[in-house]
Each structure stands twice: as structure tokens, then as C-alpha cells.
Image (cartoon, rainbow, N blue to C red):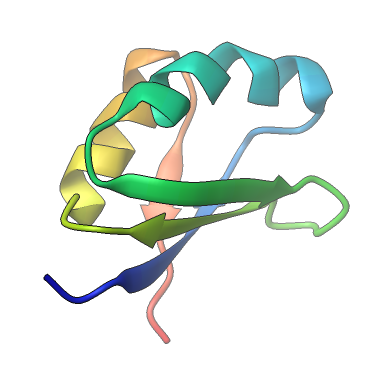
Length: 73
């Protein structure tokens, strides 16, 4: 399967917020790498996917009480 990179506008404002979603994103099947740019005004979450869908990533973030909105390139 082809690797895809997704980006999301989030409300993950700080390291504490990121730590709340870290375990779930780290253990999700289909994610090979991810990071959040908390310095960016839109708090951009970038995910390198190996099969996981945008909807599945949004669901992981929402389950932890945060928002994630896919960015269109």
C-alpha cells in the first residue's frame, strides 16, 4: 500500500495536549510517523499513513477530547 501524508488543523495547543493523544497515535495500526506543530497557529498534526484513513485519525484525536479537521492540499 502506498504511504500517504495527511495534515489536520487541531486544537492540540501544548505538549500536555500532545501527550494525551501520543499513546493512541503511536499504537494505531497504519501510522508510521506523526507530529504536531504547536508553534503554528493552526496546530498542524501531520501523519504519515501506511493504510489508516483520515477519518480514523480524526476519530482517535476526537476520542481524547480534541478536534482535528483535515486540511486539503
